[in-house]
Length: 437
Image (cartoon, rainbow, N blue to C red):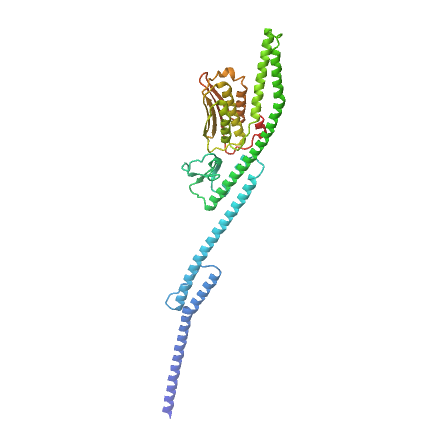
């Protein structure tokens, strides 16, 4: 019995040791399993959840680094790729939004500029001031430098430093309206919207110039009608009185009792003064009756040449070398009257067989010349007493120009008028003063 108890005790102890060993092994396995699950499942899962939360806050920079080929590693790789794609897409969208915002802001500034330019161009200030103010504002919404207007385009091949010259027609297809010239830095370029802005502004300036020219022309027509009425009144009053005086003086000279030399000389002097007054009055009446049937200097000169063809017996030759120059109505009227006065002198004094009229433009200077092949005269002996020369000289001064007379006895006469011309020439001189000089 004692031996049996001893074996039972030994077996029980062995069983207990085995149980403890099994429990230890199980606990160790559980600890290892817990460590493995924490490392391979819990921590990666938390990292993935943190990345998902960060992505939900539009932060695509964090990345999850999980090594291996299990599901968590594949999920982390997919999430990283998705974050990269979202970051790229979000960056692209953000860039496009910024570009669109900047574009809308630029268009807003351009619309505000066009609205302000339209209001300024329609103001009552002188045209040159209005255009200069608009061109100054143009530099603030575009990279253009020193924009200006001119009758001719400045060559686009000319570069000043690192600036390239550009030009635009104020009205496409009508070079006589002028050009907008400006310089552009080589490091800048004009966008399509800025190009369209410049084209629109050119059209606005051209319309403003056309409207100002039409208004000036209407004023000129109204004043010329008024002058025609004055001319009719002068003809019906002073002209008839001078005619009556000429008839009465002729009757006095026919009296036989007035044949003394002194009396005859006095009467001849009276008739000469009366004839001179009559000629001057006729010149004034002719000047007052000059009208521009249509805008433009060329049609006015063509009509003048046609009118004087009958009186001269041959058509004057007109050489027009200012095709792209736009003259104001005041300038057209002054030049037309100068040509008429010159042709009147040819009819009365020159005995010429040919007359050549040239209008040219070069280096911002307009030149008018009227030349005949008549008998000429000595300038010093006639210029002081010739009323027509004084009229032409006064009209040249009204154009801020110069009048020159070239004549030699037996070799004809040439008159020249030169004056500066700018495209922004405005109604700086009152039209009424221009017409009543």
